[in-house]
Every structure is written in structure tokens, then in C-alpha cells.
Image 1: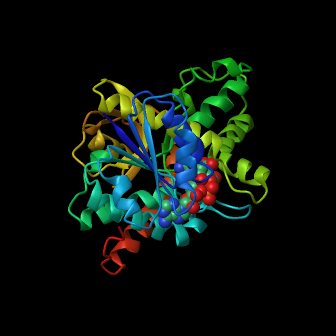
Image 2: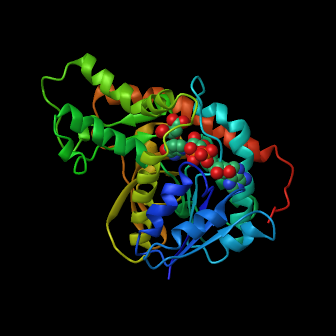
Length: 339
Ligand SMILES: NC(=O)C1=CN([C@@H]2O[C@H](COP(=O)(O)OP(=O)(O)OC[C@H]3O[C@@H](n4cnc5c(N)ncnc54)[C@H](O)[C@@H]3O)[C@@H](O)[C@H]2O)C=CC1
Ligand SMILES: O=C([O-])CC(=O)C(=O)O
């Protein structure tokens, strides 16, 4: 029996993500929570002939507490998306409080759940969840994940376009490390499972790196005020959640990218910190998953000089983003859980 919960389930990401989770046979219970519309979304999904029993909850009548009770996996796409001209950091003002309140609910009602944070700015919202959990003495760094899968999905797609073979995209694996915004997104193209053409010029390489780093902006611009990536994000979120569910079931050796704590005593964390030359509290990298969460953190390994330069540019921005999240909770008054 596995209960998955989506917080923000009526939104642009929440609805297709809930659909994909409903289609996952490993989910036996699916809890949907939002401030609007979840009864309708749940009724709609409940007609699909898959095992998951679906329930929708709203804030009144302890909805958050009810949806979280018994949760094994909680995915959070709640919050506002970008409009053209905004950075992900511009979302902090609104989303930080939303994520803090939801994390407070999880700390009280489902402290052992695996928590998957999608809400932006991920570089800061993940530290917010960690700090809230610490306040409630329930922080387990192995169970908290920033969802950075979309960066890897984009990298695979864009590399397959360069190789002129879209059919390859599902097989192409490009590690993308760092964080989830602009220069903190660092694709390690030299470690791509499929080698880039040797004819690729430096300018073409730079264009590809820039497209992976700013792929989100491409969608924000095209949607022209109607939000940011939702469908590709739901696909990426379901892919990551699917791996988490398989790991929870006992499958071994599953590797997935995620923005996780490097301060835990997880295997590999110290090696990665040494490679970075700096203590960075959270970092996205391929991790190995197990029944208890993060089992192993992959180091960067051999990278090129160009990639080293990208990492150097990412670290100060990442440190700043993490600090912003930590300070938001440190500066906040003690909150009573809003359940
Ligand atoms: N990690 C990643 O790679 C990506 C992250 N995102 C982020 O995901 C977030 C959601 O994006 P969309 O689904 O497009 O936005 P949306 O506006 O379509 O949906 C957000 C949903 O959250 C709900 N919500 C707001 N406050 C809430 C609360 N306190 N409790 C529960 N639900 C609440 C809203 O009612 C809405 O249904 C944004 O912050 C966006 O930037 C988007 C794409 C990729
Ligand atoms: O760009 C945005 O604001 C949404 C996002 O995180 C992405 O698409 O990677």
C-alpha cells in the first residue's frame, strides 16, 4: 500500500501530475490537496481504471491534515508560476510562505514521508522545508528532494535534437548538477551517455548550455503570461516520483537527479563537497535511491575546464539562494501548524 499526495493538485502542474500518478500502478491511494477545485479533479480521476483510490481535499475541515495522514510520498507543486520578465527568485515572496505552511503540515501529519519539492525557487524552497522540519525535530535529509528532473529531461531532448535523432532522447542521459535556476543549472555534457559531434563548435556548445540553463524561460515566453512549464514538468515530476515509488518498494540501484542535502552523512556527500571546494548545503546531482531515501550521492567525477567554470559561477548564486531560504525561516515567528 502506497499513498501519494499532491499539494497544489488543481494547478497547471498538479492536474497532469495527478493524472500520471493515478496511472502509476504502484500508487494505491492518491490524495489531492489545493485551495480550490480538488473535489472535481479527484472525481474526474477516480473514473480511471487503475488501483489508486483518489480523494480531494480543501483547507476547511482539516483538509491538509487529512490528506497528509498516512502519506508515503508528498509532491509539492503549490505556488505561483513566472510571467515573462520574472526570475524564479521573484516568486520567493509568495511561494516561500506557501511552502513553509505546507511543510509545517507535513512535519506534523506525515513526518516520515518522502517530500518532493517542485515549487520555485527550488534552490530556496527546499532549504525552507528543511528548516521547518528542523524546528519540528523531524528533519531527515535522506527524505527531502528538490525536483530537478526537468533540467535533465530538457538536456536529453536538446542533445537528441543536435544528434538529429529525437527517437534517441529517452535513452540519452546527461547529468545536470547544481541547482534549478539560470547559471546554477550546470549540464555536464562531457558525461553525456551519447557523445556530442566532434564538429560542435564552442559557440554551438555555449548555445546548448544556455538553452539547458534557460529552457524554462523559453516556455514562459511562449506562454506569454499564462504561466511556465506545466506538462513537461508533470512528465518530469512523474518520472522522478515513479523512481521514488520503485525504490520504496525495494528496487535497488535506482539513480535519479535531485537537489538534496550534502550535510548528511550520506555516502558520497563528503567527496562531492571536496570537489566543489566549498560547503554547499544543498546541491543537485545524480543520487542513488533506496527504501530509506538517498543512499548515495554521486560525485562530479571527471569534468572539463568549461564545466569547472560553470560550477564556479553556480556556487555563489546557489549559496545566496540557500541562505535566503534558511533566513526566511530563522527570521519567522514560531508558527502554529495551520492544519
Ligand atoms: N521544479 C521545476 O522544475 C519546476 C517548478 N515549477 C514551479 O511549480 C509551481 C507551480 O506551477 P504551476 O502548476 O504552473 O502553477 P499554477 O498556478 O497553475 O498552480 C499552482 C497551484 O497551487 C495552488 N496553491 C496556491 N497556494 C496553495 C496553498 N497554500 N496550498 C495548496 N495549494 C496552493 C493554486 O491554487 C494552484 O492550483 C510554480 O512555483 C512554478 O514555478 C514549474 C515548472 C518546473
Ligand atoms: O521556468 C520556470 O519558471 C519554471 C521552471 O522551473 C522550469 O520550467 O524549469
